[in-house]
Image 1 (cartoon, rainbow, N blue to C red):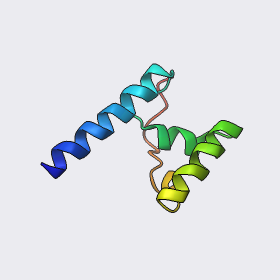
Image 2: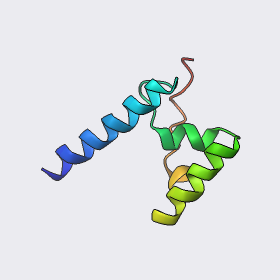
Image 3: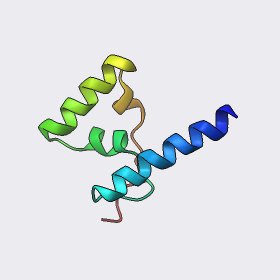
Amino acid sequence: MKRWLWNILVSIDQFINTVLGGDPDETISSRAAKANTWTARLLCWFLGLIDKDHCARNIEHDEGKRL
């Protein structure tokens, strides 16, 4: 059940990233870690409050190149 829920959460994350114009197989955290905008930095700062270095640890180097 735990793995199933995690997979659902990741798919929602990827879906929202896709709706916002990102790569369909990349998470918002990965995209934000690669971006150099104030909104991306703000998101990474907020996520870092919950999970230290979240964005940096979740960069997907092999995703985000299709755009």
